[in-house]
Image (cartoon, rainbow, N blue to C red; front, side, top):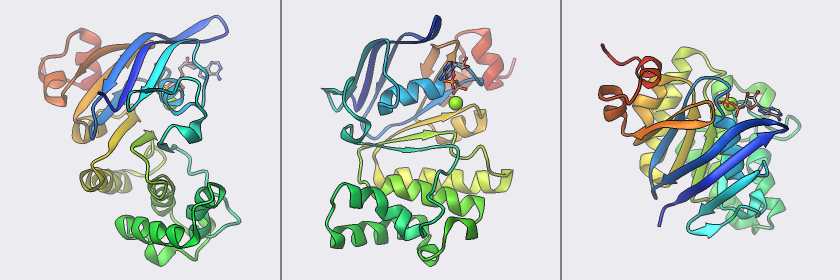
Length: 238
Ligand code: ADP
Ligand code: MG
């Protein structure tokens, strides 16, 4: 059974078809990258999987369960966005604890999970600070930490590094890869950056106009693109 499965998913904004009968299967523990140019529907697809958008047609399954009409909080997923969306008035610790408190997780358990996430992401010295006193890279670590403490099976990332400079981007790329190796959970990662896709992914789904053009390993996509769009987008030789 796949970790995440999308069946014949369509999504329209008014009369505009953004996703068209899209099918996708993500294996347990897989790092899947959704790659494509701006406006091709990557965020829309991710938001449908997260339950932040209602689908027009089709279904979403997580661990074999049809969650198409389930609330985001009941789907067993954690999401990291491009903008950090941290609560400015709370400390880092408060930000990490917030969702857990709402979910009535016991205090001791909250403390344990925060300690573990802080260790993994190397943000222990930042726990008492407020977001304004953090760098962009540190904020993004905290944002990842908020998904991490929820102990979810599936992580969704929407261009988490695109607001960072090149050096931080490559640092955090390595960190996300390490995180995946350590947690071995399913990750679906949206980007328009070919390098990120090629270095992070077990498999890449290349999208254009709400349709998956090719779904393969980075190596196959690079060496054997199925059409000219994929070849040009991924920067294949020849
Ligand atoms: P990507 O993440 O690949 O850049 P999006 O999924 O954000 O693309 O958007 C796909 C298409 O849907 C774009 O043409 C965008 O303008 C349109 N779109 C996205 N959100 C909305 C919305 N809330 N209302 C209307 N159109 C939208
Ligand atoms: Mg987007």
